[in-house]
Length: 289
Length: 274
Image (cartoon, rainbow over all chains, first blue to last red; front, side, top):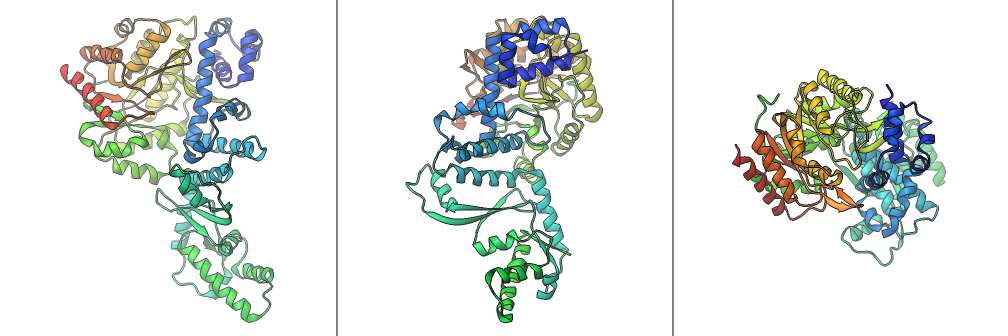
């Protein structure tokens, strides 16, 4: 019984352009790698090649179309000849089965591909890198099951924390962010940019402006919270790995800022502890023992 | 198998871009078909929000990822998640396709034809048996569009469908647009096909539109229902007491009034033989 072998070969012919060419040029050679009956080989050899090629093209375009659904503004920025990259996409990222929602899997794969095209200079479109990154973060945080579970877990952990922690208590705890939070740094005001692009307007020039955007999966809710952070908060959040106590973080921050006086350190502590408690209240971080 | 199934009427495939119009036009839509795979791995709160907003509609899940035709056991996790979804939606039936979409090393991502052989029939029966051992909700198999047959099979598609339904005791989700497209692309009489399959097993019918591209008629779900598809529907309805008709529209969405008119036409056809 070799039906699975026949299905494996057919699947590869349909999704792998190089292998399909081998199959078209020399089907016997292509079939040689699989354990097939002579009837199965004869059937495969007799497939309508033109229709098979058309179907393969539909599959390829279908993958790209599915992935782009996650990035609507990015899609509008892509050049009209972006489809020329489709063959490279399916070749470099063959469709391997995996657990998870098909659209999420394809979107993340397509993101990696487009990001690589931008990085290597093959796609040189103004604002594409920023818009893609923004939309990827928004989509991932809003649609990944694991992210949703982490958000709920953070909220559950915070519900167990005492209501009003003192500064001393916070100093002993380890602030911990999680996979339900993404902070990205952009070189321009990406929120304003997206507002223009979403309304069909392309800004002439977007001035450089360091912008930190927080993407937060709201616990037990379908939505994603997006907010602009200042650099200080973004840096503090970046230190919340769950491995160091607040006291240790404060020592590092004071050292980095050149704060040596007790009064200075005390003021820093008040500010930072206040910020950390606010981050806990927003379920952006939790405190670990 | 059809005994005891409710008559749902005329419904629409739920698609996110149509959501608000669906809510606004509640009185024109009897039930909704949701895509199973969009909910199996979805953030629970997202699905729940959707189901809550659609609580006035009976929901019928329609999947694309079961791959009953793949010669390997069904994915148990996929089955478990499908069972949970059905528990939530309390659907009268659910469906997927008589095709394969994946093998261990490749996810084709689209419905791909089976080779109509005894071995393939055995595989389908085994896999549907596995499905039924986990899920009590009645299951329908749908005929697919395919642009190239696998030559030199051991039986016709009609015989394969007939024997699959008979051996698994499943209902048929007859996609009359798929039938029309196949009859055009592969050159056969759709009515000969209809006379060769057990129409008494048809529970639900899909209608939709295709478009010419790549030298053939393609099942895009992006166009109006072709006149010939309406005629095929009339034949089916005249010969089988079906429980539901669903319009599938996935892209190039028209003004929603056109969709409402299409549902009205389908309802008139259904009523003419009820």
